Length: 271
Ligand code: NAD
Image 1 (cartoon, rainbow, N blue to C red):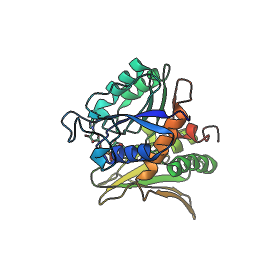
Image 2 (image 1 turned 60 degrees about the horizontal axis):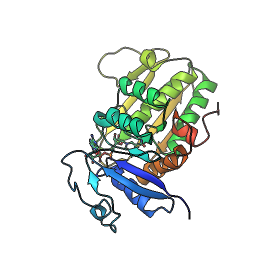
Image 3 (image 1 turned 135 degrees about the vertical axis):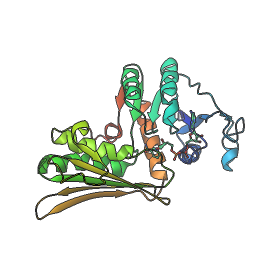
Image 4 (image 1 turned 60 degrees about the vertical axis):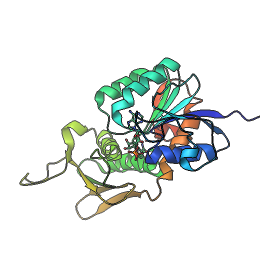
């Protein structure tokens, strides 16, 4: 009999969490092993399948993450809980697929440290298309050089809390790294008022919010007399869940390490 990969979903009542549970329940190689949400979330203690109008899956919604060895925790919740969730995965030697965005540099340090012991895939965007766009952005920026002006805009639904999006930061960072720049020194997030002319080497990022947009990112590379635009538009939230579960299948078989979606897709060495 085929062995199933046990998956624990954190943020189980959220937009992403519910999509992930549906994908897991409908797959033939993944098994739902846990469903976690915040204390006081609606449906606590009820069957995670039944909550979504699916047949019962025998897994009750809980507010405490308690993974076991060999399970893959897929966390799409809020950054406040990320460090605790990393610690729980470490204690249990469970793998982690981290989709939550908006966490700070102290959490990144914790992830790097944890990656010495357990296998982790962390990505600001689990879409295969965005992963490729990020790689194309780096290739284009390197080929064109920093004299081409890099400007990025992103659009997301009105509920999104963090800005610029984790994906926009990732694309901007790919452009910066490919041209020996850094985000700290070169990124300008939003322009208003009399800020003067554009500085050489600047990487501009603009965040738009509204409606139900799942996520759009466009990188413009502007030269004198010509311009390149690299765009990705997400039209179905399922792409993130499908990508995250592709990462879950992959990470279950990896040695300890902190990986990203480019590793999962085998794009990491492309330069
Ligand atoms: P959402 O608000 O619909 O869902 C978040 C869920 O997490 C809610 O059910 C909430 O109750 C729960 N939650 C909050 N704190 C928690 C805690 N401490 N422990 C457990 N559960 C907790 O949000 P969403 O649209 O599903 O997005 C969730 C996260 O995933 C956000 O950070 C978002 O930016 C990110 N996201 C990432 C990707 C990607 O590809 N990496 C794609 C989409 C969304």
